[in-house]
Image 1: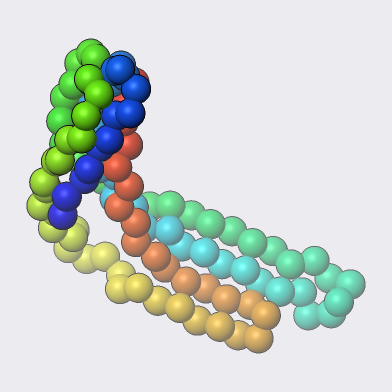
Image 2: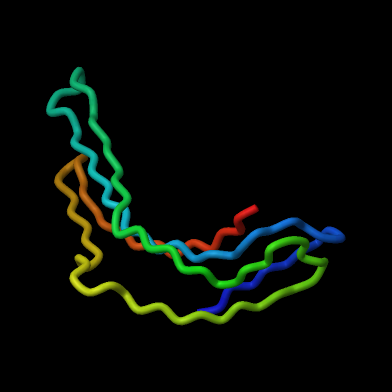
Length: 101
């Protein structure tokens, strides 16, 4: 993959650029009757953080490219989705790039 960082101001202060991989499980159980409330829950797990770049100070205006490789951890569940009427369960996987300041 590739992360692109564009700094539009003169500079920003940044400590590091990281990639965060996580699995989000979402569950919504619908009430059986209209007067029963629905219950929702989201749980994030398999959280893995990778350091892409250590800035340690000011990052000047410009466009920066950070290529990376990432292998999925062994033993993770595949993406799932199950709909039961108004109730559902799903598993999604996410990669996020974040700047730590």
